[in-house]
Length: 232
Length: 79
Image (cartoon, rainbow over all chains, first blue to last red; front, side, top):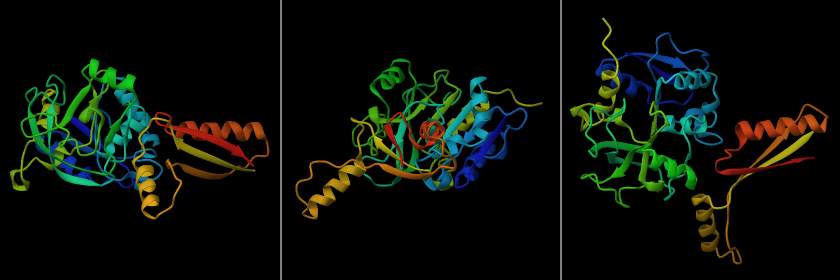
């Protein structure tokens, strides 16, 4: 399996996600945002966390219109996998690959803490290593993670099972307390219509080593790698 | 030619920053303010003197980048 991690000016989590992918068994290449093509044979595109373009204008707005995003859109249209984490999720929303937008956190504070997520479904390329309904322990670090969409979009996301993760307590219960940024329906991550694009605010790549406090994030990268036959 | 683009949140979209500013004004004792919504202003220099061309360029700028039309409205004024 081959992954391409896109690097924008101001990305800062590309190294962590690269390491998470490599330790799950993927080959990984970093790709600069000004490129017009993805590396030959790219299976997965990752938009990492950070503060692309200093969050100027709106988070992810300028990166969402970068040259490389045309290639990412074409990859997604072919059914290729795309994962956006944190700023990457904001970029996916701004680029039109996912609906809705991430607004300023409802309490206006940058939040940075450990966070449980409920895995809504485990039949996608991103979550097959988890159990349906499992609460996974990852972390969040963002100022603009308040997922907002119009009523029609929200109804469609819920009706078609496109909510990937919700903020939950350790038992997987969706509570108001667990939803610290004020997201509609406690949404922490969503899929595209064809389930091949995932955007999520929390950072699974932070929790892949016992040394740093947990390994619940590993499942996401292992799921992705297990979706592809091993290269000979 | 100069233009001013104003981007504002659509009605019904929560604006926590506007709310915070509203609260700060109250705590400063500024009276008579019922609500605050925060927006953005862009002052733009245009290289053309053709008004129709300017309008087209500004519309494209707003639709492609300056506003996220999921949550924002924009208004263009050409000086």
